Length: 496
Ligand code: BG6
Image (tube, rainbow, N blue to C red):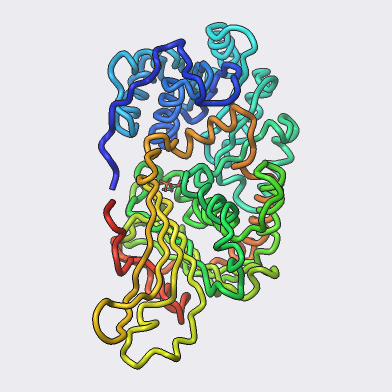
């Protein structure tokens, strides 16, 4: 459950608490494209505000731009509203106005020179050695025009560029986009973002797997029966029909977030916690992904989608997708990975569930209950209050031998450091400023994923209707049989 925003004590402007970030970073001008869009409103503006006020980042100035013809004052009002509505920390007036002064707006239609002038102004406010971070919060078809504009405005030097997903819309367009972006930026300047990898809980998968001797020896086809990565959302289209109608659930969520999370679950131990080693192992997972078989995919569309504003009356865009994927390598041969996500579903959840193979159980008498509640599970909850649970059968106290499903649970809230969690975009913005690619995607990885997706993109099964508030079309049960979806959970998480 989300907490009401808390007021936090930010350091006084100009003072930098020691020990928060190890290195001193150069000041940055953040050029935010798509600055009046949904992502900017929900995540990027609140995130930049927090980073700037908390002194986690160096000094920053923001040059915001979008297709809207507004001025800086209007944009500041827009940003204030966004931060008030979506920020997870409450700001007082002076905190807000100290950040607001750092915001400038220039309409994208004013052209490259106007953008260059605004950036020069912002740089002048920051002093020498300024770097630039260009954030492209724009749909795939607009990305190239922005890259060209940055080149025309002469803003490529001293910069990094953060590109939003989906990166391209199929293999061909991703290759072309990569080629064209490489015509302007070097690979080391490019940060292809996937915010799921910035989630504290996603990084905890790496810690959990590779910092402990307990699970890694059983992390393979001999002990694991199947894996589910399940991200249902209650959210509908919100204001994003334009984006969503041409994207759909597969490109919006699966080819990006769900496959990235799958890579963290499935990868071999990297040789070091550094970008090249991690990317190599993730890319090996993507290369071993079996081409997606359209027969093992359920596409759904919620009833009423076609009457939403901005949606075509005969739209075939899927608002739901469930699929069975497989990895053709030694560790995972024969282990199904079931992925599901969709809009307007019964609950908002983000879980990874690892089902272990069952014991022979032969020593337990009939009626003991052993095995009746499914296999042992390790469950990662990637929500904003991240949790991990290990479920197992244990003896019910009392005479006889009755077995119940029990669990050991851990919540990040219990660590005493919950207040230090950075929202995923905050973490990734900071990493991009530091030039750290560890949690970003590579051109090669993205192209492999599009390639493995080609059979589905070429031959998508027709969308099946489902009722808003349900768990998707009925066909999802056949897809996963003889197993069952973990969600909805039979038992709720323990309160802590
Ligand atoms: C975004 C998708 O990338 O991720 C949205 O475009 C989706 O459609 C969102 O709602 C989910 O992210 P989170 O962090 O809110 O679970």
